[in-house]
Image 1 (cartoon, helix red, strand yellow):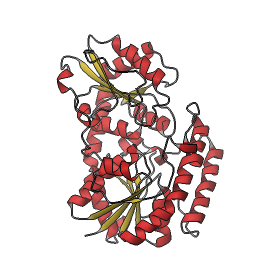
Image 2 (cartoon, rainbow, N blue to C red):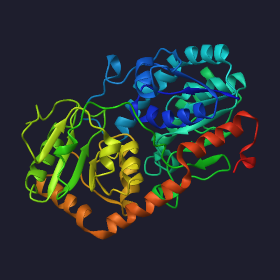
Image 3 (cartoon, rainbow, N blue to C red):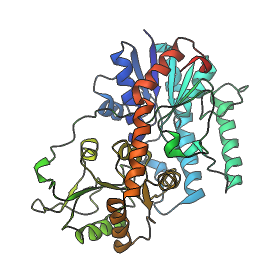
Image 4 (cartoon, rainbow, N blue to C red):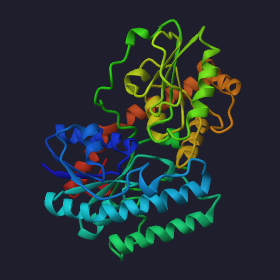
Amino acid sequence: MSRFLFVVPPLVGHINPATGVAAELTARGHELAWACADPDLVRRLAGESARVFPCAGPVPGTGEGVRPPDIRGPEALKFLWEAFLAPLAEQMAPGVTAAVEEFGPDAVVADQQALAGGLVAERLGVPWATSATTSAEFTDVFAGMPKVGLWLDGLLHRLRTDLGDPNGTGDPRFSPHLVLAFSTPELVGPEARQGEQIRWVGPSIASRPAAPDFPWDWLDPARSLVLVSLGTANTDVGARFLTECVTALRARTDRVQAVIADPGGALGPSDEEDKDLLVLPSIPQLPLLERADAVVSHAGHNTVCEALWHGVPLVVAPIRDDQPVIAGQVTGAGAGIRVRFGRVTAPKLGAAIDAVLHEPDHRAAADRIRTAFRAAGGSRAAATHLELLATGASPKETP
């Protein structure tokens, strides 16, 4: 059996896909360990028994890494790299080095936003795979802003010089050995990056720790169910948008019920007697998606892929980072409608919800992606590719 070290950032949306692969590898008898700047978060998502090597590093929403809520576009991307991703790589590197030396993995699995994993593995001569938990970078996101692309190239070069093999030449976000892309070209589009080391495995969907009790008998099967979620990292900017959602959904309660995730409490306490809208700080998203008819989302990669895994079309309102790219993938595939997060009004939002609920083309596109996702193999396929990597198989030899 082999040993695998998963190196992840302290981000729920990046740890969750890895947990499914880790669980599959564990079920096959392999030994697993993790390296992260937030060990408690890993244990909450991967299980209390998870072996986690602690690393230094910034945790989103704390200290100097708090991002001003109003920055968007290139400024937001630059802030992400300068204030979070680059410091995370630099500060995690000693902990990752210690983990590799103590645990002795046969392969390192490095999230594409935890660059210390790949760079340290490269320097120490350990085979490594990229866990690509967002597909935004599989398209040319810098085509319209070449100066930003050049700036990022320089930053990545500096990180390799400081943390990895200075003689290396590849992009440290993409392993030369194996890249696990948790999507498929059916969503990403015809221009999706290809390469002999890239494996499109589709979403890694796995069971999660149980959420607080959910009132399943509250659901009305006679009405369409709309799920609203802005993820776990957008509580600072979501109040206006969620309020517009409430207004739009209230106007449709004769035919729609809605469950709204509101981890920041922007909407205030939920009325326990409300039979039309249920607002909760935490929701059992995967079980709800089995019953949902539409999703309103910030176009976070996990939420989009989990919705489409269930064949559920979306209204996407991207905020920042990779979300505009993912939103473009959704609309490009025909599986949803995009609205402007900062400006959409309740009437326009309601019209978009009506469209994805009732226009058949959106659901047909979502069903087409669902079929592609499930055929790709998910966590089982990813685990098989990692097993081959750990035993020395080259990308050309993997199925």
